[in-house]
Image (tube, rainbow, N blue to C red; front, side, top):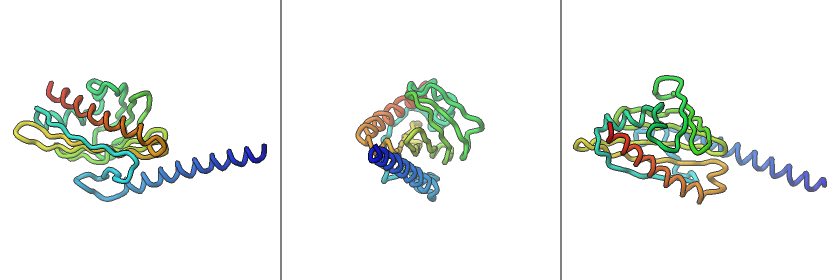
Length: 183
């Protein structure tokens, strides 16, 4: 019985150390300097990364207003059920949102109107960096999104998280396109 308790204790300590290390790595990353116009770049070494782009038949102003009106996300993103923003949308603004039964705690790290918008987010066992880039072109907008996901669960279940992130990024772009083209 003592050996079993000792092994269990080692597993708990190991898990806690791993979780603490993952959190430390994420905090180190978000304190880096600006890259690609973003105050916080995605983590190229995270276990899960995804990038995608789409052309939206709407002005960059319309697309920008759709994405940055965070309170309205549930109206055009089918997986988001709730959003709480406590202040104006600026760099440093914290907000919470629910999707897929999970609550995410996020903070805007970059707001460069009509050019770049990004935030960090955390939930149980995972931390993410979301970065959106906008390019106006002949009355249309090219939107490029990139996201990195790290933490205990993305590392342990990398294949599952990669598949879902790839699908989610494409879905977010399609939903942004649909909502922006209706404005």
